[in-house]
Length: 280
Image (cartoon, rainbow, N blue to C red; front, top):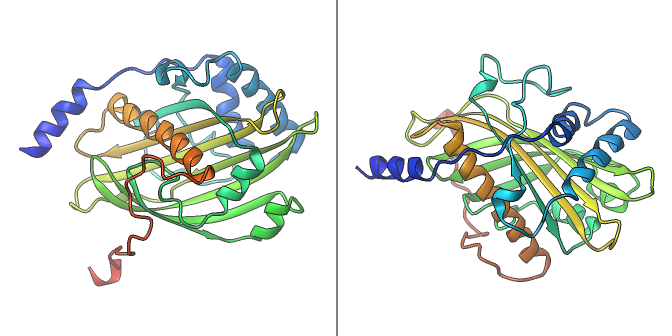
């Protein structure tokens, strides 16, 4: 009964997200594809993205700064794997632009926080980031790549544990500004607690660009491609949840960087309670 009511509620809240124009959609995909390619090429895609972002009211209504880029296909993922046998057309593709009143360097340091609970969205109740490359040199700027694995617990339509690879890259633009770029992906399918629902595909690309008007202000952009077979699998419904989660994460990270409690109600000290697959 409760699942039926939840499904009906989500259906009522479903909405179609505006398709991203080519000026936004192309650099979104290209930044994922060419994440580890030549810095000048990546920089050009960042400039293209910035040109469009600056046409938006970054403190305005969420719907006015949310778009749906093209789905992520096996030809788009660059050097990372695409889940075998999965259909790209099942993805909810959502991108949200925003703004931060903190400099890019603060976000670089925030990325090195191992516990991302109350930095990510409210549905993220456990998030441990383990670094697989040198953190100090990345923060100091003496190396430009930071790699990590991430163990995440999401509780929303379903409750699920999953693993995510996430890389961060510092980019020096041709005008001398220092930008931050990240991409993440999941490998394999993850089953929810009920043993039926599955999380099938996740890709993300995130951008932090220093404002040309104020180096202490950062332009933000977060795109996610998510496919799941859960209580509801309609990309429009999932997309609505994703866009709200991205914007919530913007607000949470702002509060965290400001040393404020913010609206996050999750327990950052939650005990690790992921079942061991070998014992199930």
